Amino acid sequence: MSSVFDEAVDWLTTSAHWHGEEGVPHRLFQHLGYTTLTVAIAAVVALPVGLWIGHTGRLRGLAVLVSGALRALPTLGLLTLVVLWQGIGLTAPIIALVVLAIPPLLAGAYAGLEAIDRRTIDAARAVGMTEWQVLTKVEIPLAAGLIVGGLRSAVLQVVATATIAAYIGLGGLGRYIIDGVAIRDYPQTLSGSLVVVVLALALDAVFAAVQRLAPRA
Amino acid sequence: MLLNRTLAGLGALALTLTLAACGSDDPTDTDSSDNGGSDGSSSATGPIVVGSAAFGESEILAEIYAGALKAKGIDASTKLDIGAREAYIGAIQDGTIQLVPEYTGNLLTYFEPDATATAPDEVESALKDALPDDLEILATAPGEDKDSLNVTSEFSQKNGVTSIGDLAKVKGLKLAANPEFKTRSYGIPGLESVYGVTGVDFVPISDGGGPATLKALLDGDVDVADIYSTTPSITANKLVTLEDPKNLIAAQNVVPLIRDDADSDEISGVLDAVSEKLTTDALLELNTAFAADSKPTAADVAADWLKKNGLA
Image (cartoon, rainbow over all chains, first blue to last red; front, side, top):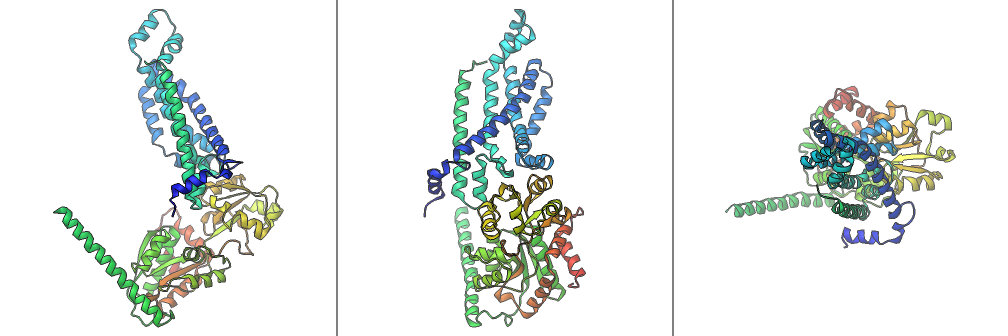
């Protein structure tokens, strides 16, 4: 009697599972696509707001409150809600995932700016820098480590959660998990999960390296 | 000390369970060899506990069975929401419950995973053969709760589609169902082999014909949706359920599953009269009533139905 792990290894080493529309490379590509699109949209929304909050120190309480509330939303429940409003398609899972990605990005940005020694910023102002120069030449470079940290956390959460896109008929690595459960093909489910885990670890390693390159505040 | 006492307690519990298991196993073995499984009418009928699976329709049916039995002066109670089939079949086999509402097709595949019967009478006779000696089914109800393929009434009129076979003439068909529909015999493979419907663009939506599937159908994102045949949304949205003359989708008639040693002529008489009235329309009506805004309990819905049908 072989364990489900052995069967998953068999599944992963079957070459038919690595070709075509339903093969791992194509699913992986779709999965990265959803992740990239989600994080890009979330970054466009969250980073400017986070930087503004960090720079001015205004509305910080509100940001903490809102991002806390967003974090508390169950993504699958949110997905169902958006589907009932937007129908099936790419929009619904992307909206649900963007909501998931915003809090860490927002927190990374304002916390990164807050962590900078105030004397550094006062010095920048004292040498005659404009506010824009203070932000772009002093604050962002010094906060880069925490900003990338926020990005890292957002990417990890999204890459692990983008499996829900398969719930409403899209592709990505979630297909293996959801289809496997549906027909009790647990080796397939486990294989899909393992690929997600490996992908998440690989991305995390990349971000860890990038974060190490960033200057410390 | 505490550990010793715990171990002793566990030992006693294990012993009790073993004895209980023997107690329920042995008599049924001799029973079935004695009267060849004819019926158990001779054995004294104890109180009947009606179990149910963990979903609304099963709970309503259990309440209906219990209500109908009580109306005839039989001592009956309910033990609802036991869980999945593995759980409540275990409960009926160990005698925790004596009766549970079931569905012929799914019960058959539970005891015989490779079963191929799909027509109602074939499923019923295969099920009778597949059941263990200590369990039996009574007369089946005409009502079924099973996968059904639905289209909107506009789509049906525009394309002249009323039966699954009619789908063969529609090009670029999109169909939404649970993911298993892609590989199961009643799904995409069966559409091709039984009805010659090919080139279907399959959209797996994992909500069991729930709100997301319905939304996709009503929005026109898909043309056909697999929704359980007794779901209120079918009538509420005037969907057309496609006919299945070749029995692609296995029959799922509602049927009382009862312990052989709990059955009597009196009990089967009561339950047969109930089953006779349980049509698919009746199931739809019960589910619709259960889903009403006033949030009635399964017992309320069951009591109303029994009264309306002169069974209580």
